Amino acid sequence: DLYDNAQPGPVAHMIDITENGRWLMQREPSGELATKPPLYPWLGALAVKATGRTQEWVFKLPVILSFLLATWLVYDLGRRSLGRDGGLMAAALWVANYHCFKLMYTARTDMMVGALIIAGLWAVQVQRHLWTTQKARSPLGLIAIFWLSVGLGLLTKGPPAAIPIAWLVLAIYFDSAWKKSRPGWQLAGLLLAVGILLAWLVPAVLTHPQWLTNINREVIERTTGSGSGAHRHTPMLAI
Image (cartoon, rainbow, N blue to C red):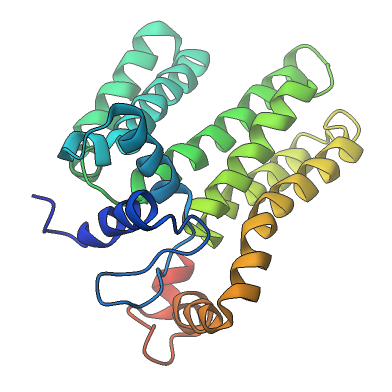
């Protein structure tokens, strides 16, 4: 049901793009500015334009593809650690998870940012395998996949997409892989990820400075546990 679980907002953003050409900053049906970064509406709008349809599955196509990507990554992570059967079991548990099963066909950003976070974690684990078993340095391709995942995740839902960075730092520390991780290229990747976000954020804020109130409500107030954006307690948010 497209009218359930806060789905009308993202769908309205896609229609706002296709009908009104508002690629930089979309608006809610109420006229208020969108509260999330625009990668999902962008991809959804492209799906609408590519198919020429406005059916439910078209709006959800980026979510469906994200689910398939995440499922394959979970399988591959399991396969690398536990063999083929372990990979299949990991993928089956992932699909059978209630929240995954629900979000795989929900017009929200959650599955997209989840898939991008998993992609980042996958890139770290593959690098760790190279560090510890082959004594090899991180390939530039894996570094690019990691930081592109972070950058695109930031452009999907903001700060939660930075979670894999903590895992990368911990992996480098525990594996004593500072040189093998190619820190210069990792720094370049960090700049790339930040640049992806800023390429949209800077012109968006310059054009719509009132969007800064969304940053305050969605990020600062939720983190500090104060104000109108504090929907959950700070310790729970940290967890």
